[in-house]
Image (cartoon, rainbow, N blue to C red; front, top):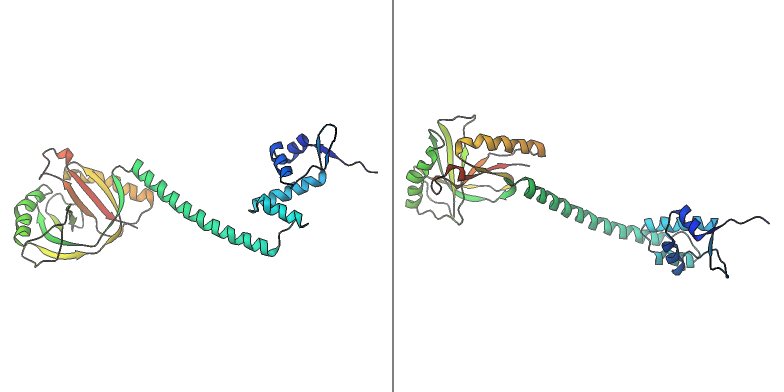
Length: 274
């Protein structure tokens, strides 16, 4: 008669790298009963064959089968699920995969937005809607001259034409110079209006298409320091692998018209990207 190796529950637990608590749980479920229980000491002994059964249980669990489903298999005398059961589990897995992918997308969006909040106090990514603007294009001697043009020429003409600007107001400039020029700047001033009007010698009306994605950066300070912000902005664009796909805008929020302190002037640089 050959000797049959028996392992105490602690030994079985160590060799199979499973806790005693888990083995007792399997026993309570009727899933993996000890091969032998000493009636005097209550010691539980496991056989070599039960090592393979435990491995099968683990494999089925990894494939998404619950302990109740595995118990049902064993009750029917089978250690292998039917094709129908496997197909059902594939369908369940597909549904779980969809949910996990959706969760991953949401988490990525959340992480990216948190990164932007944390590392991009100056930056944001926005979509710019289609708008109607009143436009004025002129060559000005320098950036400082823009304020005077707005106050003395553009604003009175827009008022004369009866332009209505939706709150909170959106105005920006587009530079048409092909290279940097500190003087004789070919600049177009645009201000959002509610409807198209009749063009005049000073103001032209047009509709600007929507920009699905624009990288926006806050610039604090005088306009002759825009280059500092552009350096930081283009470095960020390069680091993130963005591609510039349109003409940049400079949006004016606070400036000489409402702030005496130049350091409190706020402009927003907007660059279409993809």
